[in-house]
Length: 578
Picture 1: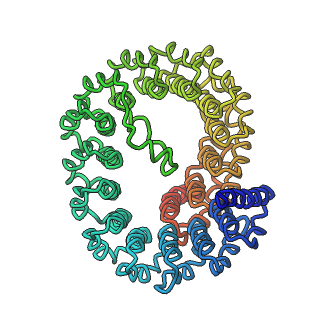
Picture 2 (picture 1 turned 45 degrees about the horizontal axis):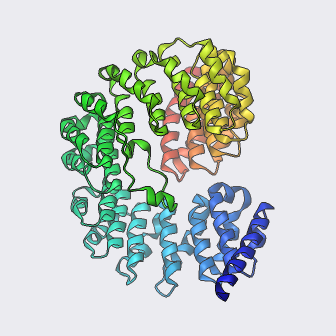
C-alpha cells in the first residue's frame, strides 16, 4: 500500500514540473533536471518538434550532448529524437551508428537501429554497422537492423535480409519483410511469409509486397486477390492497397473478388468492396452485389482494441464497414453506377453516422444522377453529427462543381456553417464554397475571414478555395503569400500550391516562393520547386540557378525529382523570353 501511494505522487510531481516548464518553452532547462524521466520527456518533446524544431531552435545540437547521459533511458530518448530531425539529426549519424556497438546497452542499441532507419537515405553510409547486427544474439535488434537496412536503401544487403525471412523468430521475420518492402525487392521471396501461421508476419509481408511497383504486382494478382479473404485485417488492408495500385489491371479478378461480397466476415466483405472500388469502372459487373451491401449494418471490430490502446489510428470506415465500402466503390465506377444513386440516397437516413458521411460523399461522385438528390444532402446540414455536416458541405460543393449549376440558396446555407464551432465543419464549408464558381466569388469575404481561423485545417481549406473564386480570388494572392509562412506545414503546403493558380498576381510572389527552397521540410521544398515551375511570370526564370542547385544537391529524392521537372519548365520560359 505504501509503494502504491508513493508512485503516483512522484509521477505527479515529475509531470507537473514537465508541464510547467514546457508551457514556458524552456525544454533546455529540463535537460539539466536531476530526474532522468524528466530529461527523457523533454527529449521526446524535442523529437516531436522534428526537423522544423531543429532548424528553428537548434534542438539537434542540444539533443546530441544527451546521447552520453549516464541514464540509458535518456540516451534512448536522445537517439530517438535525432531520428525525428531529418537532415539535422543526420548531422550526428556517425555517433548514432556507434551506439550499435555490441558492448552497449541493449535498449540503446535498438534505439540506434530505429533512428538510423528513420533517417533513411541520410544514413546510407551506415549499412555496414547495421549489417554487423544481423548476426547478433539480440533477435529484436536483428529484426530492427533488417528493417533499417531497407530504410537506408542498402540494396547490397538484400540477400542477407532475404535469409532472415526463414528465421524462427517472428520479430526477425517481420523486420526482414519490412526491409525488403523499403527496397521493393521482395517479389517472390515474400510469397512464403504470406502463408505464415502468424497473422503479424502475413501482414508485414503483405505490406512489404504493397510497396512493389504495379508492374511487379501484376504477376501476383491472383494471390493478392485471395488475401482479401485473410482472417487478419491488416493483411486485407494491404491487399486492397495492392489491388488499387493495379487498378484496371486487376479486372480479370473482379468476379473472384465479387464472390467475397457474400462472405460471413464483414471485414472480408468491406475489403472486397474496397478492392472493387480500386479497380474502378472495369469492375462494373459487380455493381448489383455492391448495391446489396448498402443495407448491411455490421462491422469488423477486430482492430478496435489496437485503436483504443493508442497503437494505431482508427481504420477508415470503408475498410471496416461493408456498406461504407460499397458506397465508396459505387462512387468511382462511372456511368454504370449512376443507377445506384437512389439506393445510396436511401442510406442517407441510416442511423450509422459514418454511413451517412460516406453516402453523402458518394453522391457527389455520380454526376447529374447524384445531384438529383441535392435536397437530401442539404437536409444533412442540420444533422447533429459534425462530420455528417462537413460531408454535406463537401458534397454540395462537389455537386455544384460537377453540374456547373451552383445555387445561391445552397451557397448561403453552406456559408452559414462557417460559424460552426467544429473546425471540420468550418473547413469543409469553406472548401465547398470554393467549388461553387460565381457563388464562391460572392462569398469571398466569408472565405477571407477564414485565413485567420485558429485551426490550421480551416486556413488551408480557405487558401485552397481562392482559385475557385476566379478573378476576385486572385486579388487575395497576397494573403496566400502570407500563409506560405504559416506555423503549420499543411497550411504552408496549401498556400504554396495555390499561388500558381492565381495567375500573374500569384506569379508576382515568385521571389517569396523561392525563399522556401531552403525550408527544413522536404515536402515544402518540393512544393516550392513545383510552384516555381508552374508559375507563368517571366521573372520566374530568374530562379533557375536555385532550382538547379536543388536538382543536383538536395538529399531528398522527392525534391530532386520535383526540381528536375521544374527545370524543364523554367528553361522553356527562358527560351521563350529570348
